[in-house]
Image (cartoon, rainbow, N blue to C red; front, top):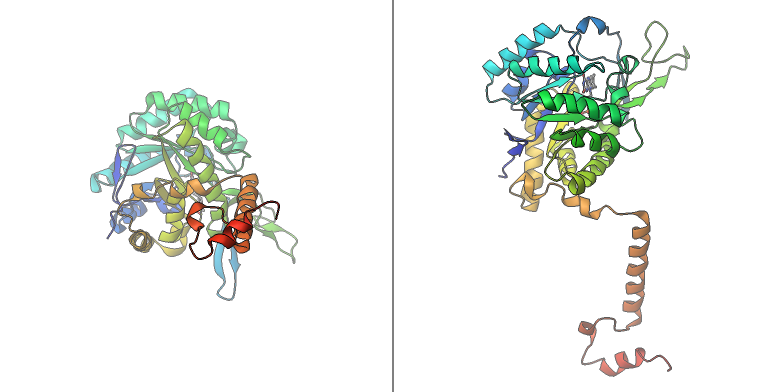
Length: 375
Ligand SMILES: Cc1cc2nc3c(=O)[nH]c(=O)nc-3n(C[C@H](O)[C@H](O)[C@H](O)COP(=O)(O)O)c2cc1C
């Protein structure tokens, strides 16, 4: 049996599986349930100082189903950050830490572009005992209109300034959560790390429209006949998430070695998680997967990851973290490698000796003649 424990930014987690910010961490009740079931850490639903500005609509989810079993592969949400009062959250952070002192509780925070607000939210959450912060620079809908969330995450200069304010006030590790709705994710990730963040989390949801109802001609999810682009998550986004995690990991290896990376997007099995770790993630977050399968999913995740590690003889997560990054290269390099492999194949088929080890006592004369240029 492999050892699934991970130590990340000084925090020791029993396993790398972290509840991603969203409905599965939306109040003390459900956070306690997550710790009870054995999740490695919980990132609470994103909080802000003034919840009165947060007004949700219903319906706010839409799903993509495929195949005869109508399996859910994609999930759109137009949900905002938490609409619960900040004071309630502070009480609940304390309650959770009293009940699960060993549980790693991470506060996801978001504020407007004002230093005082960011400093206040950091100070009040850490007084309540949270173990780390995740900065939500990535919510794609609703909040960008207030220049929050993805609007900040798409502007590396502002993001760097905000991370600087947070890191000056924070006494616990800080992760910056990236939006995928950007051309080069390394740019905001680099800005956050330059400003002192311990880690990067990637990705939040991808902007989408789930579909258009061909009877009503209205886009979905429809609220009073209208819709707005939302965030896409679940299995369908995993390939995009893997690519973006790989891009962050490669940049971090060379420019910020030792900083941490939390992979997010479409994880529902231990095998999915192993792929994020192979591409450089220290931890793996799950949000929609918990909404579909429940908190018990963590047991299946641990079993799947354990089975993968046993199969390869890996005893710890560190032994394979980032292993597959070495196999990512450019397309031009693939062309060159393929040409070289074909040339070697042709040489082997012709019986021409290209390596000294290929000389054979029985075919020595024949082999010598094949190497003569002028017949
Ligand atoms: C309904 C819903 C609400 C979410 N709310 C938040 C949020 O408040 N803060 C945040 O940082 N991410 C939020 N997310 C994004 C998730 O944390 C995660 O980054 C994304 O869904 C991709 O992971 P998944 O495929 O495991 O869900 C939300 C996602 C969903 C589906």
